[in-house]
Image 1 (cartoon, rainbow, N blue to C red):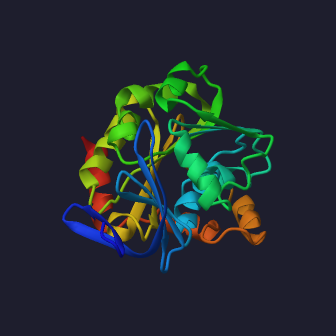
Image 2 (cartoon, rainbow, N blue to C red):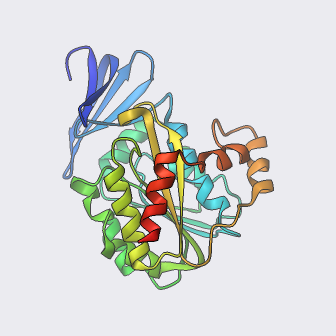
Length: 286
């Protein structure tokens, strides 16, 4: 960070955004939350020096972390979001008219307070009667969740350090699996396949170890994250991922509010480059 640029350095590479001014900075009980106005990407949120959300391209992440999972379920009613304090994923989930209840559990209230001030478009559904926004420990929430009570679990977390570290292990995955209903789908942001492949493979192995029956990888661009290429990993409680509600996905896209996701992008996002296909095949062959 200098007077003109916000830079994130990761794995020997750096990404920077030119800034106009600093809007706010607050040290919460968990992390340093900073807001900037940038030259080209609108407002930018950083957590402990890592770029998290910008006005210009947040739709890529929020749409791809929500719609593929929801449309892979036959009829999702009850959704839980772990993390997601900027509320963008919550907004996307609530576009699904069949969803009856969404609990969002983020440990850091300051993130949501900043989002309400500087990303009001992401928080436009916060007062929806189906939304239940809690500021608590997501790990404990899942440990206390009733058996077979949830249709979709979305882990919209930071990287596996600090507040997000406990969301990437066997104990957490075991509780998520237990809490999902029969057709339940779990999805978690799984970093950059290019820069963080060992972590991605460890996540997949842990999900398989605890008993998830099938995994599906979702690729999407994410300009402000390391490498510009990000991913989500979907896991099914039982059975296989055998398609999605394609007509419903096309109908939602036709409403005109989505900027990236549609039925074609759903299918395209699950195509694997050769190195990933080989890594996944080798893993399941063990």
